Length: 153
Image (cartoon, rainbow, N blue to C red; front, top):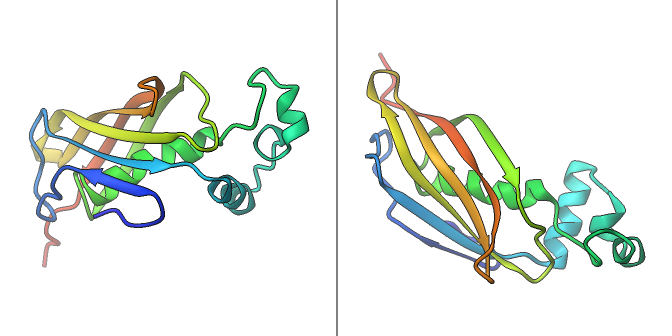
């Protein structure tokens, strides 16, 4: 289960090491807070004024402060590592398209859907989307992961 301030999730965590089936989905939702944006800026060093400075952001194309795109995309990682495929998942790659801004106060739902499984390599390809509380897609893409199997003795 995903825990933390302002998060909720759907889907069932598969047994560790189990390959998911095509069509399986899982999601989590999070309200993006001021604290999230400030902490993300501190941790990553991305102090772009459009994220942190009300006056600078007001002059931007967005008209107000926006959350970091990678903060939003990080919700996809949370779904992959905790829900589907779940614990032990190894992230191999991610293609992302940022289609709309995320504003402080938005609730974002990240969803992953299995679109391909390669059992012999334990690889899974997933469609990834983040949608705001207005039903607008804000991030879309595709992830490639490896599902950790039992360790060989």
